[in-house]
Length: 278
Ligand SMILES: [Ca+2]
Image (cartoon, rainbow, N blue to C red; front, side, top):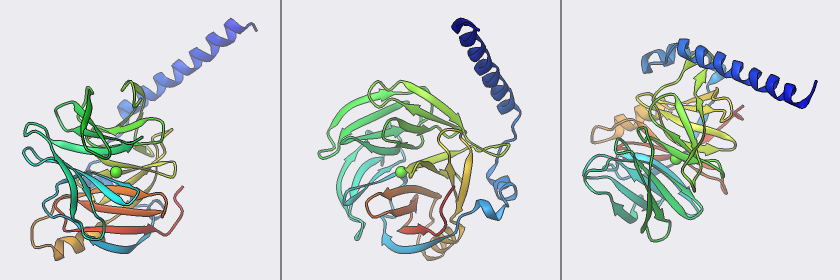
C-alpha cells in the first residue's frame, strides 16, 4: 500500500472514531448534583483524605479562583461590584495586595503562568492578564463561552465554562488547542468550576456539590472523586454567616500541600489525600 492510501485510511479511521464519539456524547446521560451521589455511589471511586491544617479565610471573599505561588496564596473573587484579584498570607488570611475589577465584571478563576496572572470573568467573555508582582494590567483576551475555572499544565491554559467541556488554550496566541468532554463512565459531568492541575490530573470543583472530580486530561474520564461533605458541614456549623459552595483548589508543589476553601467561607483547609489517585 502506498503512503497516500495509508494516509487516507488513517484519516478515515480517525474521522469515523470522532464521528462515533460525537454521536455517543449526544446520547450520554447527564449528571445533576442530585444524581451525582446516586450514580457515583461506588466506594472505590472516592479517595479518603485527612485535614492537616486549618487557616483563616476572609468570609467576604466570594472565592472563584485559588492558586499557590512560592510563599503565598492568590485568590480571584467574584460578584459584580466586589470582584478582586488578591494576594493573601496563608497563616493570617490577611490580604497583602489587591486589584479591584470594574463593577461590570464578575471575576472568576485565576492561574499563574510564567509570572503572569490570568483571570477570567463570568459572562463578559473577557480575560485579564496581570504582572505577577505589581498586578499591573498587561493585556486582555476574549473567549466565546462563559468563564468559570482556569489552571494550566505547563504548556496550555485549561479552562472550564460551566458545562462538561474543558478547553485547552495556547497562553500566547489564546487559540484553542483542543477540548475534552468530562465524563464518569457513560455519564457526562456538568457544572465544572474551579480547577487545579495536580500531578498530571485536573482537579475540578463540581458546582452545587461537595465533590471534586479528578480528571484524566487526555480522555476526559473522571478517575476519582473527593467528597468534602464533612468539611462543608463543619464549616456550615461553625460559621456565623451563611456560606456558599465549596470552591477553590490550590496546590503547593514544593511541599505537596493541597488547599481547599469555599465562597464566603471563614476557613481554608490543607488536606492530604491518603490514597494514591489513579
Ligand atoms: Ca485553582
